[in-house]
Image (tube, rainbow, N blue to C red; front, side, top):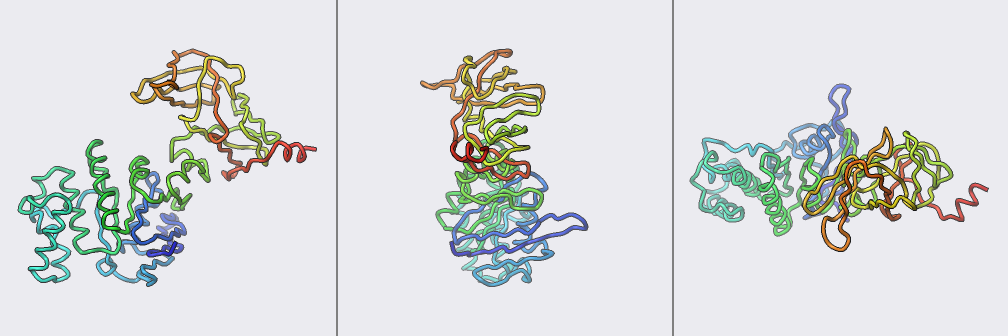
Length: 370
């Protein structure tokens, strides 16, 4: 992949705090990248460094092979959409969209044509004379997007663009942004803490924690092959079970529950198992189960049935299964003793330094223990 936008070792230090810690990333022309992580993970700081609103302590930014780190924000050819829209309340919708063009002293006729084009693009072509306060939240966000796109930016930057919208409107505007981005092949970087938004909209995800990039990849990569327990938990809400691994295949939780793993692993000692809730099967038959527990509660959630199962005093797991069809999940009442099973691909094991542990064949394990 050739890099249209390249971040190389971006770092931002505030006194003793590293808000961004060596962030490096290559972004292709027309790609939509989503920076994802909890509050304080460095994703917004990284976005604002790219935009030119925050000066990096170190590192470089290359756009089309040229360094832009020393350029002021208005000379970076980037359009920014803020969480709170940042519209001028006293200006009409059309004047808000035209603002960046006026700053660039675009001729009046060309400017008016561009504004009309942008308002048609975001389906607000009959709202140009209205004031922002007369629009809904979703409409105001579309005005902000139109304003950002009016200058024909080389990169579109979106800072939590959906966080002020209600749940139904968030989904609608998310689809509109993604379709618009794909249709115009806009190189786009979006920041969000919402996993569903990120999974829906991104070409690639960048999961961040404590200022550092934890993993970069497609949705399938991060979901099926997480590189750390943090990524496993953040993408897909995996159950994380801490304990001790012996002989590469025997696992015991801190509370004393024995777990029969689906594979053998190259290592032993302190470890963590990550299990997706939807990959765990639940049964009243405990014989042959990989682990056993007692149902604490169950909930019918429409498409799925969810159970919370206590393995021991220190460990609980969540399971989810379909509520309909041939494989519909039975809903067990609280107090039921159940067996939990899963197939090999559902299981990820990490060592005490949070590194993925590789699987080994049975023969290799026997030879290593000989």
